[in-house]
Amino acid sequence: MSLLEVTGLTKFFGGLAAIYDLSFQVKKGEILGLIGPNGAGKTTLYNVITGVFKPTRGRINFKGENLVGLPPYEIAKRGIARTFQSTVLYREMTVLENVMVGSHLWVNFTFWGAMLNSQNYRGVNKQSRQKALETIRFMGLDEVKEVKAKNLPHGYQRKLGVCIALITRPELLLLDEPITGMNPVESAEMIELIRRIQAQLGITVVVIEHNMRALMGLSDRVVAINYGKLLVEGLPHEVRQNEQVVEAYLGQEEGAS
Amino acid sequence: MGKSLFVKITFFVLGLLILLLLPMMTFKNPYWIHVLIMSVLNIGMAASVRLIFVAGEISICHAAFMGIGAYTSALLVKNLGLSFWAALSVSALSSAVIAYFIGYITLRAKGIYFIITTLAFGEVVRLIISNWDLLGAVNGLSDIPRPGSILGVEFTNHTPYYGFVFLLTMFTLAICYRMEKSRYGLILRSIAQAPMISESVGINIMSYKVLAFVIACFLAGMFGSFYAHYTTVLHPDMFGLWPATMFLIYYQVGGVGSIWGPIMGGGFLTIIAEFLRATKHLEIVSFAVLLIIIVLFMPEGLVVFPQKVYSLLSSEKKKGISQQRG
Image (cartoon, rainbow over all chains, first blue to last red; front, side, top):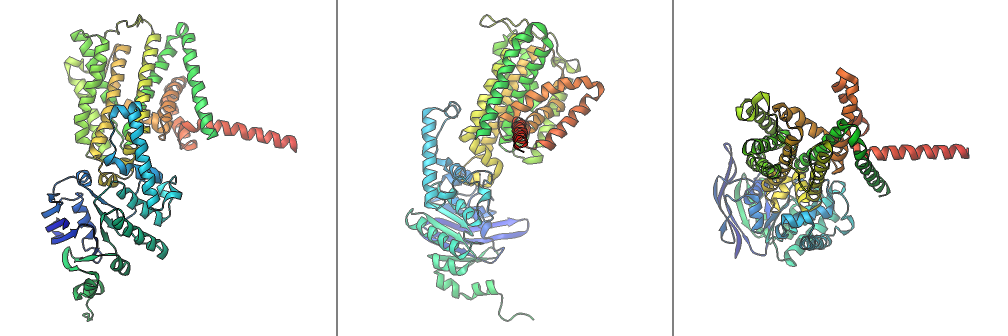
């Protein structure tokens, strides 16, 4: 059963097609790897799915509902969360505060409740805090929860990004290069965490990653794109052996030299 | 921890002193009561415009919204015979309603572009007032009635005005404090720091920015109404670029980090500016020099002044002790 269904998706920036006639599916409960050389349109695809950019043409169906035209916060409400490629965080806030912002969708309070610090508001706030602490523990950020995001080491910053996305209680999580720039120990941890997010929390995950070995080991299926077009969709070993994919990454073996 | 407690106690004592000095001055010098009233009003205006800053934007049309409140209130009382107490809330609301529409349009722009749109709006308001005969145009409005008595308090001299503006500012500070400390503050700060994430976790950025803007302008309108019936004269230049910039200076120089910034900035700079009148035609120059000195030596703002004094004193003491030992 497909959770997300992208059909004929096209995004033009001026005359340039960042994504062209792209169709693929994300099945419920799987980890889908998304690969492609730099500039292939992977991050643009995330931005189009989450409503940051409006597609020029095409449909994005999530649980049978068309997402095209909805603003980002409405799409988040429907259960899609994402992380960002460069380490975008609330730099001046602590880890705990960062994660508490993420609980926005399921925290219900009224204006006057917040102004008068009512009992109901305090209860809701406490609940958000507890849930944030739980998620922080899940991501292994317990010991740095009072540290400002800007002072965290790179590996922790990436984990925090995932943590913020996770606390929105999504059904679909879009990760953008979660292990890029990490040392082997950190990336092994992160891969383990992504597996646990899928297995224990039952969240469907899409991962963009350049580390081929890690991605192939992690993904149930892989989608390869280049110049915004679909190259191949299939099982990891199929994609790895696909000639077009090899060509896109390594260039043609017999160059024009 | 210890230091911040020290700061809080210092503020508390200073606040009490101002309150206690008040009755002594009442009979002797209404001029200084006027200065106190203006400093408390400036605290309120600076604290409310800082709310927009918490959401990551800077508005230079805050004086215009104060003007909208002031003129609305003056017209309602003078021409329609409404009581001041009714006009106060109506003018604050009218300011908020206009802020809603203006905010909904201008807050689409960010950073410097938002600043430019607010600059433009502020000037538009000033020009409309300057050219509208109903509002007295460039001659301004005068003979605005004073507030009627309430709870047995008569507004015949400066003292009740001081008490009243003190209450208004307390109300403003309470709202701004709770806005910042509650989840609203968390959300506004998140929007200021990384709006892309806020959007991706389901926060409707626009609605929260507009909310902050509307509340800030509601409070500005409220102070405008007070101001109109306190001074009893209004002139378009009272609500132009200059006062709007001053409100920004109060909290920026006072310290942007907390609600104490506008309290320190608005309170002290207003009073110090009065003393600088002694420099006659160099008044503005000396005020500028003072600002530069404060910014250079206290980049965190005036809020660190008590701490600086404290650490200076304690280091003197240590020096004394080491000399004794030596």
